Length: 363
Image 1 (cartoon, helix red, strand yellow):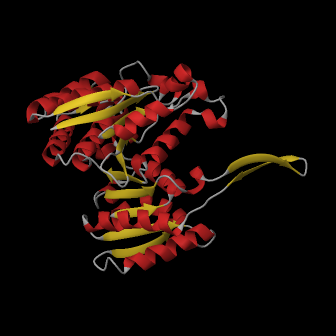
Image 2: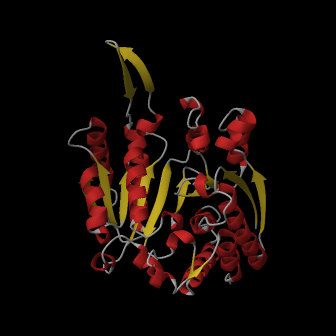
């Protein structure tokens, strides 16, 4: 099978972690007889430096025309003082909107080898952690009107949170469909005790619930959900929520697994052309030091194979290889125990070696 993948290396550690994902993908292509071709795309701070634009239109077109997009990370302190509409993150928002990928899916799963790295107590971990957050991605406050103006002599900032019924229904159905493929439990998260947008959200979710009688739908306020994720994460199967709430909750959820460097994500819309990326940032402070964890990016590539290319066996091969590498005691810096005596039980590896080891464990 021939597939064209748009590759956005981005900023900070982005180029390093993406390179290791490509090492793994190339080996998969060799083993299973595929051809993966790569189209380089500049986005983020590197694009600002080159073109004065975080995502030039021709770069966006390359992504739209590809079979799927693999992204490292964008942003960094270097571009903190550029105008708001030109920040690296604006390129990412424009990419999501341009590709019409409205559903971001972030799995939260504890790897048994990394249980000791989780901040949660063993009694909580023993109940199991395996849920997915389905986040609406191209609506809400991030895409609403933003303005700062002087009112009554002082600066006043306004950010508009807006959702239409169709936008909520679209992401709601993704939540229900995802739950159908898992344990048939869906938790809809909003703030309906305060926000009109959340009251509409709850109303729409309950309306379409009638079409999914097999799925148990529950409602939860976002502040309670944030608490429950650390108190009893085993209660969750699928969480569906709006853009800003999902952004915050998914980052919180990633930390209970032991390392944000392990978590992949997929962003999908009406087509199979998706956007795949680890959920961590660009970490410019460690860029070029070969200590970044590439596993989140490598697992994102596995999600791409599964969800965009229908290559389930190949995706499982990557996930099995990651499991084997962890099982043999190999650890990147972020997954090493802080206790010196405990850390002596493991083998510390860098970014390049991690990618090579996973590649060598592919079957």
